[in-house]
Image (cartoon, rainbow, N blue to C red; front, side):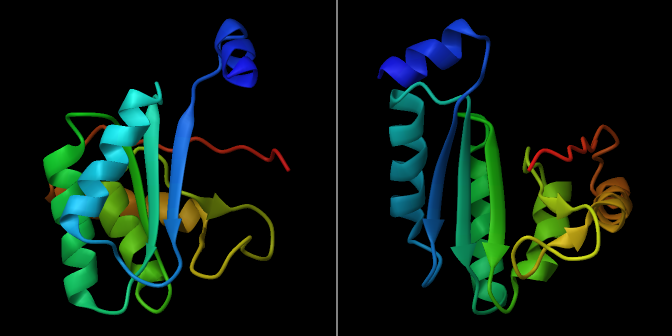
Length: 140
């Protein structure tokens, strides 16, 4: 709690982060994760889950669409379908979308930051997301 108070006093936001390295949680578990993040005072709730197929991506898209009005969401997939999910979820409204700078990704499935932005912009045009943006940072 002291660290959170210090961060808030310094003007920093809080990202509550949830990872499931085995699967995409149930819709109820995803909603519970957002509620817990909001109750903890988070500014953003990050959810990263391992996708095994199209149905998993559909579940994350449904989650993003239904819950993003409760708290800003950063949603991304990992695993076999993770790479494909990142620009799709970015265009659908995920507020943090991780790309890499340099030669190699930090984790499997990351796109080079410039390519990720292009893909999100391309998909966003078709989805009415003209305000999709990209911030880059070389903080390591």
